[in-house]
Image (tube, rainbow, N blue to C red; front, side, top):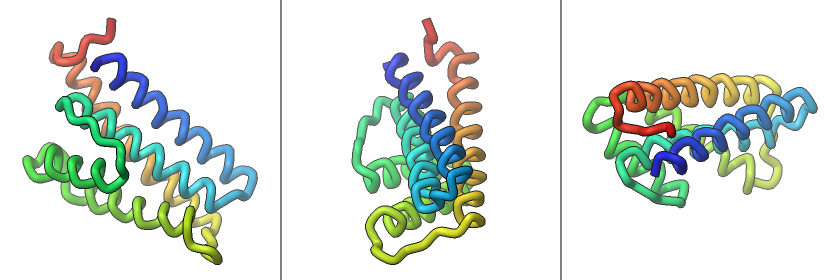
Length: 135
């Protein structure tokens, strides 16, 4: 499980870096989508620490809420942001005619970065407590 957590968080960071490249190339819809996927992978990494493996977007969203928001580990605003990003990603990927602006993409990257940092800090705390072995 520990390797999977680390690899999944690394996938999150890769998506975040991709989003930054895409915004610089003025590919705003794609930057929004990759920002969401950064959040998706970060949430998935956190869920893996609770031995929860789910792969659908809705499954990750629901389980994240149950495991981290309901017990108060993270603030409700974190869940609202994650859910909103899921909606925006679906529009970005599936709605013909949806256009994301540079501001939309920059905001998505900002939200994804904050979410990634929060999940990274959570995982680092687990490592420090000896709950995740990084060896």
